[in-house]
Image (cartoon, rainbow, N blue to C red; front, side, top):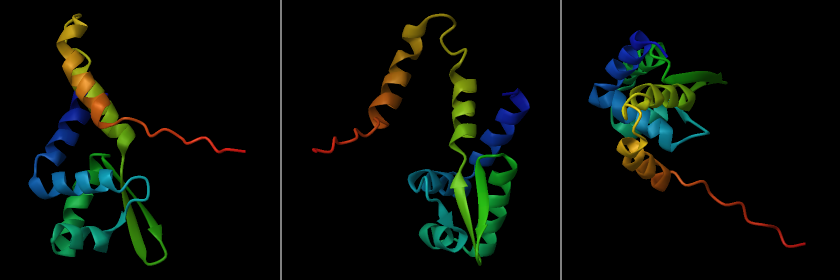
Length: 120
């Protein structure tokens, strides 16, 4: 990831409605949300949300797909991961213990769910 791409993404997230929209889309992964549902959830007029989603899309943080009459928006978690890695890659200056608390926090909040074994 280049610095310019990171700046664009961070700028897109630096506004409260866009940040909340992105966070809501993350919570609704992998299904995403229709634009109207997201607008109702955030209590934002649809035309206002449309402008915010456009900015998030240009920053590649959000993707969209038309389903019949609805547009479904999804968080682009790969792009978000790339931004996080870009920010953290050099944070420890060769001393992993500096970044260890950050990694531990991420691991504790995002533990993968165990698949239950089927009993046959």
